[in-house]
Image (tube, rainbow, N blue to C red; front, side, top):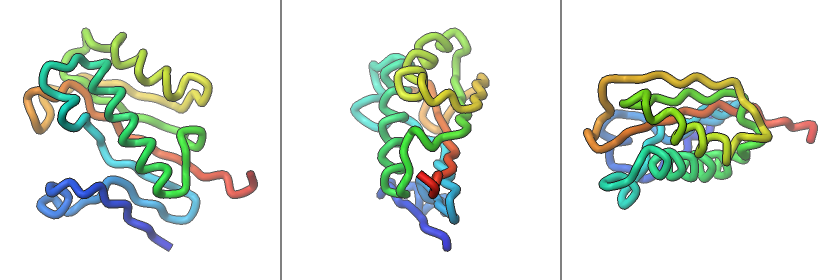
Length: 127
């Protein structure tokens, strides 16, 4: 059974996607960026922390938690921000330790955005 988790972002209808999809015990959370007011004037740490907060909300709505996350993929527009982003990631996943990838990209959809994060979870139905 497939469950689509919508965030209410108007771009979901324009692009044809949703924040997260759960199929069976697997949850895929789409690339997630910070949302206002956590963009303009905010550093990469603040943006990553907000994106991770949004991801945790999507996971919860899908019946999962950060403890179920097995992989993250992080995109930054400036590799020099790696320590800031890593700090936010560690605060959420430091004890979970998912497989993780971080890459630099030339830009994100909004020039003020510095980081975008994807998450993949497997919900342990055995407890």
